[in-house]
Length: 211
Image: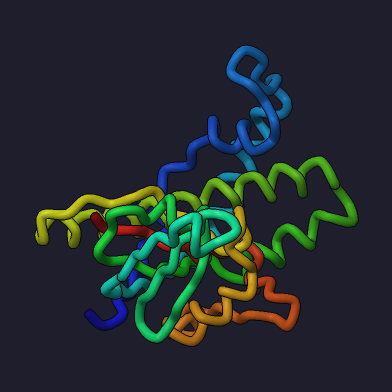
């Protein structure tokens, strides 16, 4: 299938302040106090007014071949999709039994980075809360992506695996280059820097297996 784009309306998002608290390191038994909670609510409203959620994904046929111990020093897996061949024990475990894989990319826009920078030099506490709020909002975008891919999987009698991003486990960060080559990431405002870090900062790329 060709690339599919999502441009959700930020007004439809429901801020999850419990997630913001989790990103800030609070536990359920010891949540934020009244003052911090007020700042979290302020941050959620302020950021919601500037976020520009955008996402793109494409589903590829996938070949998964596990190497035997006699072939590999450590058990690993050969993964083939599009014109890519990857060897990864961790991603192989995530994509075990999958026949397809979706490559996804999502962002909430550069305005979020600008908002966080504006407060970083004057109010470090609020800037930290904004960082956590941005993490919450990009998760909401990826949840929408997951839901769309799940619908596609269901039409084919398939289910989906949890997403897995480059840079985790034994999957090198330079796999980002393949995402940017195979997906039209620039059309949702994404840039891959020489450091392999994406701009805007609150952006995600990931694999989602279909089995």
